[in-house]
Image (cartoon, rainbow, N blue to C red; front, side, top):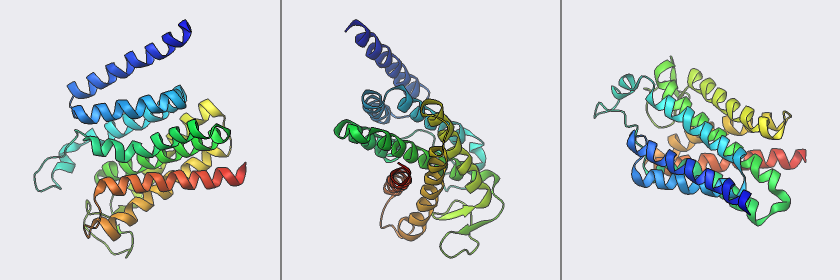
Length: 241
């Protein structure tokens, strides 16, 4: 019992520290920090430190990518500003699918390994999407609509570049490596990368087909692409197992 209190006590202390740092540095609003704390707690309780490592990797990579050359990205907006502070809805949009997978582990422990793979797939997509949009805008050379393949200005919904897509794939690969460090280096790494890349492409498809026409918002697009990626990873894992 004492060991359990120490185990959870250490994590709660680290989580509280994380929340305070994110709010003080302006990375998350207060509500977003609380949402991130909730998702982190759910993942920790039902997945453990391996799940937190995946969440943390996504957060660090996403934060670095968002902060990178923000003055260049700010020039693309009408307000001449590139917001870094995330809202609660954005946190749930990117991490909600991961939290859902953690809850499924609690309800169906016999398939816990499969749900953890799906969790990793969802975060691979969230990472790929963030890196491809944030870094692709800076380093991309040719931009085109993912549905029509016509050249369009960067920054529009559904517009992609080869450079951004490759950077996103690299982000998904980092998530796969973090997963493998806990679960083993095998073909599941490929499943996670595939899920991340396809989820990122799905994000662009939803952006071009629905978000640009104002049928759905960016948060719905982000949740949709992470859930889609989780399903892709799940199908790959189900066929393998």
